[in-house]
Image (cartoon, rainbow, N blue to C red; front, side, top):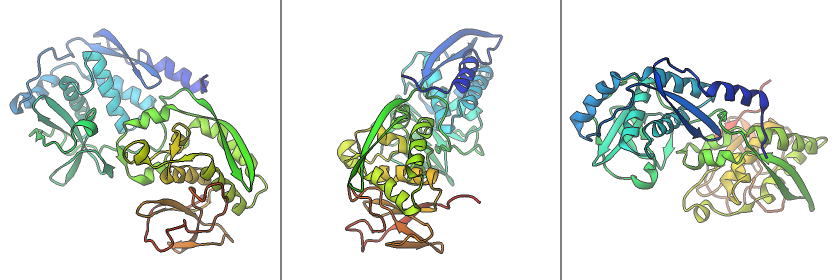
Length: 398
């Protein structure tokens, strides 16, 4: 079953297929990009037909060879699609790469696909660098984002992140040569962060959540967007606070939020916080990321409804999103060495608290105790442990 948004999707369907068709186009290439079916018009002579030589001088001269080819109409088409689909820089790079895979009929990671991605990103204004070794070419972008588990190189005072396909799985720690070429040495910074979800996901799935509140079983039925889990599956790990700030999907906004808002009607702020912690504590099965995924896997709120297990980081992300959307109360994200929690500021709210920037925040741990709605206690076992504040939400804007 599909949960669709007709006007937006109609516009996407009309505009994405056959957008910006140049007069010199000789081939129409179709490919899937998440839930979208896209088409690109490939100009005559755009495709580089020769075997790539992965050597310093050959790679440097190849840039001029690509410049002589009619790339501009293809690049314009890709940029227009990225704008319409509301893609951030990372997803734009994936759009380029997947389009090139369809054009060249090559798999992800093929040298010609990587080189053409490098070229088109440079022509889009990004400061991009190429690393190489043996039969490998890899694309690196200048970024100021905090990133984890992704190879980074430093050139001068700029940090470059490796965005090539499969790099985390196969190339972590492997030394590469840096091509002595910087086509946009003062180019744009590349960002991995998203302030809104892209318009590439159409479907939703039904889900129910059963949880305990004050000794009574509660059940809520709603819809969520499973495609977000696929979109984020191979996404670079970014600053942990972004997972807190990531927006809820339209499916959750349209189905879960109205029900919770109705259920909170007439409750005090304390009772509302108790209800929301009861939901995050007992509606999900707890299991540490390293047991489930073999590594750390922070989630955005929607992902909790996709995966069978979640941990403290994930529940904190959901609780943060729910309080921000439903109650608009100030919050801080509290990070212990091996636990994440949330504290909330509200008039008259009492309990174990942290003072931050002159305001008192009371602990509302979204993870435990399980089947409890009690708030105002430091998570058991962490009473004497040090912590840091990862981020904050200042509350309703007056």
